[in-house]
Image (cartoon, rainbow over all chains, first blue to last red; front, top):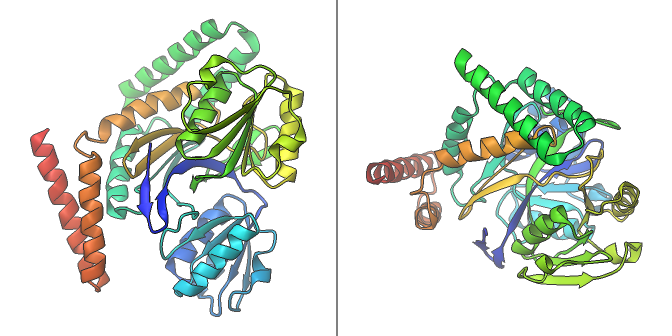
Length: 203
Length: 203
């Protein structure tokens, strides 16, 4: 199992996919990393608050449930937050946010360095309901980029929205109509294999 | 961006990698899914409590910080939990655990069906500090298995512990010695490409 040595000991990471629709997420700082994290959180339907003394135009063009406050970090801003992202350029402030965030039981991310309890935002490949995410947990970001390209290349183009919806619909029908687990599994396997074979033929 | 229709509306998922070392995680139920989730949580160094009226031998052989209590679900068991996993065979009990878990601000997983605020445990491919995770967010688990094999096949064998450690060490050195970001990035890119070329040659 994965073990990453960072200052503070060895850390092991659990990959999860978390629904954050309408959940309060607070991003402190308004630089490049902040913009990236804010965009992802908004795309997942979160209610995002960005706090920084100066917030650039790039944030104006973001779509979603976004509030910006031009101010420096204060603990009151993260109250009731589900996710807190410390993305300021100041290590000491990031550490303060990290500690405050853990204290209120939030999921905490720090952009400047990996701390023992801070989470990783992996790179993401999405194809309708298929989500692939990957990271080198901070060890070599360029390797992540290399592998992302490789992985994208093995997810065939025919696995599009229509493909996944067809699978999903068939599975729901089978769950309704075939109570025997083994029999259902065989049917689901055959259906998938046939759909892949048909897709490959047309590529 | 990903949108999954489940009963209760459209849900969007944020993939994260979360350190759970020494965090309290509670798994209710002791069936196949419970065993799988318990094993993963233990592997990440969590402090795991399994609660079920009857807990089979398979749980005895698990390694890590595990406590088992043979009892039916009571709310007191999940107090202060970071993650709560509802894996009983009873839909009503799972729903009760789900609601209790959300109320105490835990990350909640439910094995029987996807609920609007329940998380997904994706399949995981690990190679030292590289973590790839994937799921079909419940739409077609067999597709996940198919893609997992495909993805594993494009992560070359030479990307082992030694390979990643070498990269990681080089990166730390460059961060220390090359202050210019562009110059450092070029060096990191060259180093990675050379290491991959050498690895491919020897395969």
